[in-house]
Length: 209
Image (cartoon, rainbow, N blue to C red; front, side, top):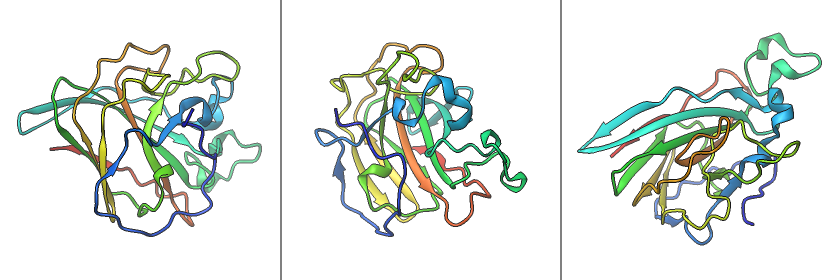
């Protein structure tokens, strides 16, 4: 399986890439259980899944849900001696922003913008997969794509700019609904390392084209 990536990022290279990169075959895919298990959700689930909102532009329409997870399972409020100045943050300043989409539209460009860190590694973005639903090591409390074998991922391409990432999605497969808080739909993630301060939390924007 290709979805097991390290739990921390030592550094993010400040590199601007403009050419498209294929996300199919060598897909950056991360398993949701690598972000934490149900039993310790208080340590990683910073902001639970949002209500569904609709985005529309140029005749295309998608629905979107969001969630924020602490990459290092270090929700400040869950620590033995939390720093009150960091309440409501990931202590390390390393956040996973998760975006789940459903749509009948085709050839949709999804742009995640206002990102505080440039991209230099494929580990920093990709598709979040529901990879383990079995307690105590599984994760059913995080948005993810219910395609554990990775056989129905669309042929996404991506292009990067200084503070934005563009996912060109040819189609949105109709995935089965996950359990508990996994939701249903194509789930993308972006990892942001806010250095040196965990605050203020930078909230990426989402647009479609």
